[in-house]
Image 1 (spheres, helix red, strand yellow):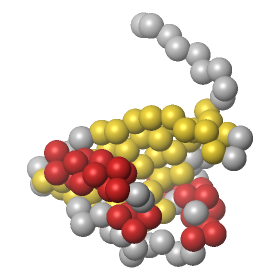
Image 2 (cartoon, helix red, strand yellow; image 1 turned 90 degrees about the horizontal axis):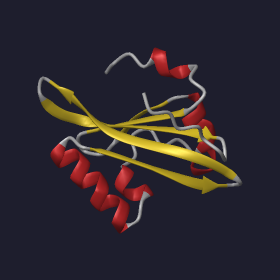
Image 3 (cartoon, helix red, strand yellow; image 1 turned 30 degrees about the vertical axis):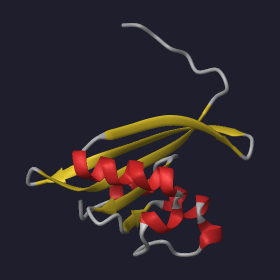
Length: 110
């Protein structure tokens, strides 16, 4: 997880934390999204969230799980996908991908 070049040009926000919930990477879109909060690299996710969200973060880090949901913020609908990543079989941290989605999202059964 040292090379995040693949995420830099994505049209969605990518934020990565380590197993201690410390933010280790934010791509351009993520930095733009959270610019009003300053440089968050090296900060704890726990400081950026309320108790409910901190519980989810703790659970994801403990279990290696995934959390997905949609939100509406500033008139835009977004899909939030948070998932653990592993290093040598142990949870190394979390990746969050936040993408703007249309009001009507097609759903296909294949």
